[in-house]
Length: 227
Image (cartoon, rainbow, N blue to C red; front, side, top):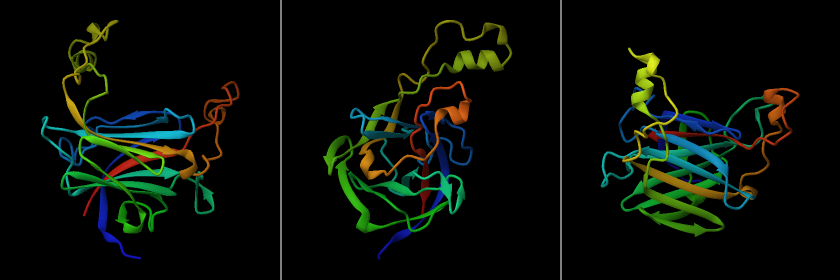
């Protein structure tokens, strides 16, 4: 089976279970480069039988686009085991790679290898979309392009708290530092039937016996990789 190159991980961001994780500029080796990950969101889609994945990367300006030399890989653990023991390892991947004016998507499919290195299986090609556009193929919806940064954070108030004037605090309102900024965004909504069953763990196992017995979704994380 033909593969395309070998890609090695340089940045990772996780959003485990039902929780949403933010990751702005805390990967020193890649901060403010085309490999940096801004945020990763995973949540129930518009259709309750689907899961939406959103990956954002910093965009220097309105003309900035995804780097053709950076593979974006969403990892999905749908078993909650590694080998024969409990653990988190990718059972499926969704890969996205820009070439020219298009973003090409592969998967979800079981990768040939797990961990920091990846290959792309051309047989797993799923769809392509013009940068700045969306499409739906095989029940999966795809978007790739610039979007306003959805992450709300008040850097000035944060610096007041951790800096020389902690008494100022955050107050009851805040200024969104990221409001005028763009990000390169991937949005993929996938029917859960293509993702398999969620791992056999529930919220009350994580939070204690008094927590509601709500199902936890897939363990997911995203990586950017270079050849």
